[in-house]
Length: 75
Image (cartoon, rainbow, N blue to C red; front, side, top):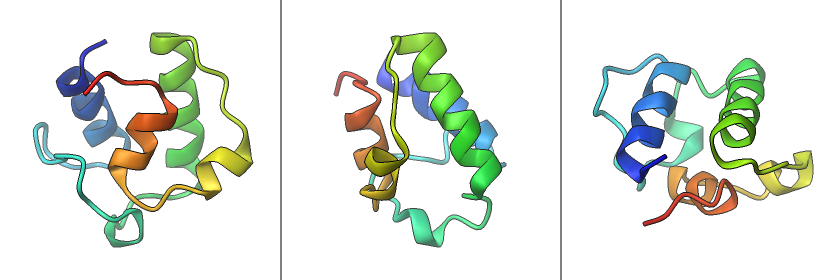
């Protein structure tokens, strides 16, 4: 999955129009970055990139770029 495709999927997870996320956004500024969104992100990373994430990895993220890094999405 490309970076753009992953970001578009993440847009859906956080209930934003497609193409909204660029990577620089702070997770605390995303209204719909909730526990449900975290679960969806984990599933997205697992199903598309075969990455198993731990809660500790996600807690350490502060930006969308951090999420992309731990999900091993190519820049």
